[in-house]
Length: 351
Ligand code: NAD
Image 1 (cartoon, rainbow, N blue to C red):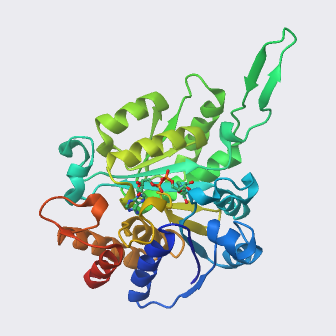
Image 2: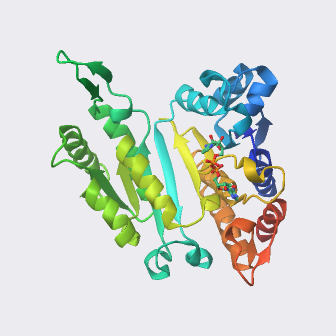
Image 3: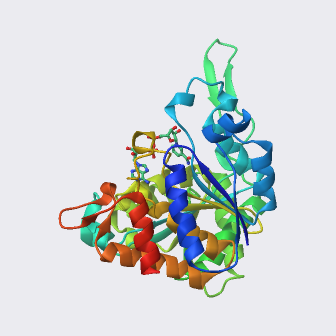
């Protein structure tokens, strides 16, 4: 297991250090190598994605990333800004499948803006296609018509192989979970997503154990806040997934708890928390490291097929929460307020 560790900026180094501590505590053979990205890459090599970092990422089986970005780089030319490094590494590694679980720990039910009975026990996985759809389709642009009026154009496009490969990711994940896939489309209006639905139905024949359902995106947006626990795996295209995954993340109430994975066709992946580099709290050892620790668990599950150790980490996080450990962002009356490094220690102790 060769893992590229890219801490990045802001709270990145603090939270990644905790995830590395947890991985090492598992006592399984792995090779971890660190490299700079984002603002740290710019400082080290004048490039948010230094050539040596990209080389390491390509040679590794998986990438564990903290976060990139700091306001002090906002005046740099666009291609030297930290966020550029992130977009480039995703593209270079062909990461077409974005996995965003929304899981609510019972202990944190009061952190959600929804009623506890609606979200308590929520365990949903959104699988979003990341490299196609209206975000990339040609033609696109703003032009001026003959009558002088301006017109904006974007093109929603998917070919069947792109749909099949993201569908396969969703069905494979469902096989490791509760064997239910809900495909989200707008097949009543958009031909692109009519094809999406056809391909999903064809693919489902290869997965007789998985129950496939379909939902229009407008209904899905409503159902996510009405009764989110009806979903197991939700699969959708780039634009619908962009919106629905942000909506789903808020069901859990706390950004510091949400891991994510982006995978290529061979399950090589980049694993990172869903939040940013939080420069406002960087260097204070107060950030919540759990999203990053849970991202490391996803890495074991999806890239290394190590369900046992992935579950061990997730159970250790649950135990640390059940024992009352809370970083400042999720702290409530009566719990033990701990620092970032202490939360890492609590998870290691629970392991
Ligand atoms: P952010 O996610 O960094 O922070 C938003 C708020 O959430 C802040 O108040 C922050 O303190 C808090 N927060 C975030 N993560 C936390 C954690 N683990 N524990 C406790 N509190 C946490 O978003 P932002 O402030 O909009 O952006 C800050 C920088 O991060 C910008 O430079 C932005 O471009 C970058 N960013 C990077 C990524 C990424 O690396 N994937 C994603 C989003 C934003």
